[in-house]
Length: 53
Image 1 (cartoon, rainbow, N blue to C red):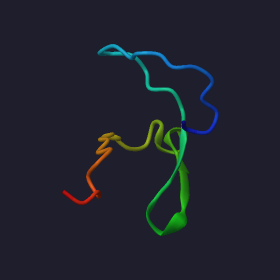
Image 2 (image 1 turned 180 degrees about the vertical axis):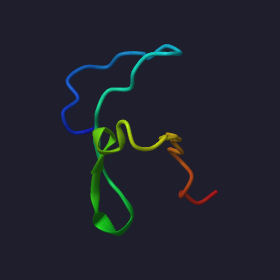
Image 3 (image 1 turned 45 degrees about the vertical axis):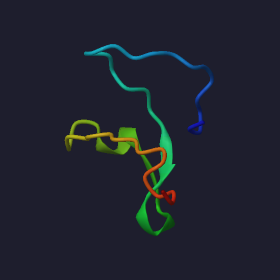
């Protein structure tokens, strides 16, 4: 669960994404709020992308 998350909820089209913190490439920590107002953010989740077939 992302840091700071307290409950599970379903987002609907047009809802604002909750802020979260994740480890990025090179072990750098980033938050969604770092990009607010400055860049577009595209989130894509591949839960099994790096697992062997």
